[in-house]
Image 1 (cartoon, rainbow, N blue to C red):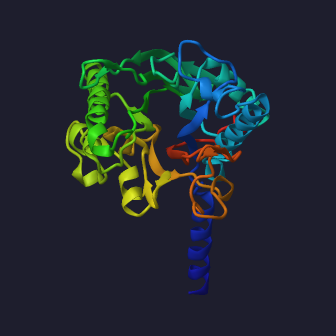
Image 2 (cartoon, rainbow, N blue to C red; image 1 turned 180 degrees about the vertical axis):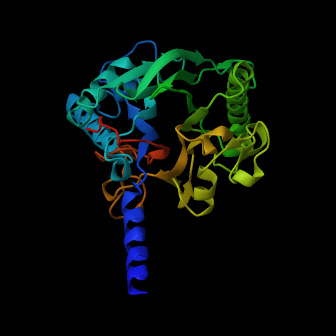
Length: 353
C-alpha cells in the first residue's frame, strides 16, 4: 500500500511539474484627453490666442515644456502595473497640431518607446484635433482616414468641430481598426447640445457599419471623449452598446465602461458629480476566446494619486493645468482610460521597454 501511494504521489507531482504555466501577451489600448496641449505660437487661422505668451493664459515656453513632461509621464504609466510597459495604442484629443505630438513622443519617458503618429488637421474653431499614437514595434498602420462631422446651428451656419479618425492596421499581425473621437461639448447645456452628440454617434455608427459591410469579421475599437456617459442615448440608442455579453445581439457593440460607470467610476468631475465621458467600446468579436488571437480582458480608469487634486473644494478631482483662469501646473481635467487585450503566447513579449 505504501508503495502504491508513493507511486501515485510521484506521478501527480511529475504531472503538475510538466504542465507549463500559461503565458499571455498583453497589449494596452488607452485614451487620454490632454486638456489643450497647444504650442506657444499664434495661429492666425484658429482661435488659439489664449494659449500664447501674451494671451489670457500666459502660455509660455516653460509652461508648454512642463505640460509636455506631465503628459509624457502619464502616458508612460497607463497600464504599466500589469503590462510592465507603456500603452501600445494611445488615442488622444485636445492637441493643436502635429508638432505638439512630435514634441510629446520625444519626451524622455516616451522616446525609447518609438511611438508613431497618425494625425489629420480638423476644422475645429479652436484648432484642436484628435490623433493616434502607436508603438512601431507592435502596430503597423495600413490605412488611415479622417471623417468630417457636419453640424449646423439654428441659423443654418456651420458649426466646426473635430473629425473622427480611423486607423486600420496590424497589431502583432492581427487586423485591428481603431476610431478616435472627440464629440461636441455640452456647452449651452446637456439637453440643448444633445443633437450634436447624437449626430457624432450616428457618424461613428456609419463608419463601423461601413467597415463591417466590407468585412463582417472586422475587429473595431472606438474610443474618445464623447461628452456623454455610457448610459446616454448616443451610446445606448444610436450605437446600441451593451454592458453584458449575454445581452449582445448581431450588430451590437460592447462597452465595458458602462459597468464601471454604474459602480461609480468617472474620468472627470463637475459640480460634485462624476462623469465617464472618456470611453472605449468595441465589436463583440473581441470577447471571443479564440486561441492565438487577441481578446478583451478588462478595462479601467487610470487615476494615480499625483493626477488628483490634493486639497480644497476640488479634492479628488483631476489635477488640471488651469482652473478658474488660474495656472495650477497640473496634468489634465480628465483621467485617462484604458483596456487590455490578451492572447496566449509561447513566450512573453520581448519588446518591453
